[in-house]
Length: 242
Ligand code: SF4
Image (tube, rainbow, N blue to C red; front, top):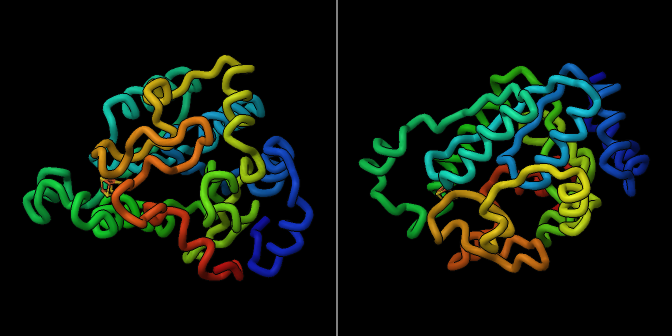
């Protein structure tokens, strides 16, 4: 099945209050094998990977290796690949970190994080969306993460006419942690140090946040920026949101 822009409204009415399992079951039934996951292995991504694992489906997992990840994140990626027997495709920016820093300086993230994200995160994602051959993408975003994400829906269309599917959109931070704990799942060790949202390692990009609320307050603390660009365009183009 190929979801068209005109199908989105009906699907989003049907799944408005749906739980992750219902959304994933439908997605597997209707969209597999044209279905992939984009994740940075935060807790929401781990929940989706675990649910899919239980369904016995081998879905490709795409990870954007920006060159600036915490060592703990890369270590956790490797741990969960082994534990879940995942097929992970790590996609890097066109410029290695060394070459990037020769061209733009060592700390572009401190002066111009938009450009830094655009080169190291958004461009690799655009490349994946254009060349991977998959048109349906699972990601772990949730409404409770930020004001802009609160406007998002279960099914959304992106700039490349690919469909983003958000199985955890209606879950809250506590729901995700409950699932992780109840199922004894592993998680990035940085959560133990107060990080609520884990992106790139420079303190300007990821700092310990308001852990109790699970929000993104620890991201780009000195800037008005709240999104790296991987998701925000969804709310502004073809989905009728602003
Ligand atoms: S999160 Fe920070 S280091 Fe990573 S790409 Fe964006 S600005 Fe650069």
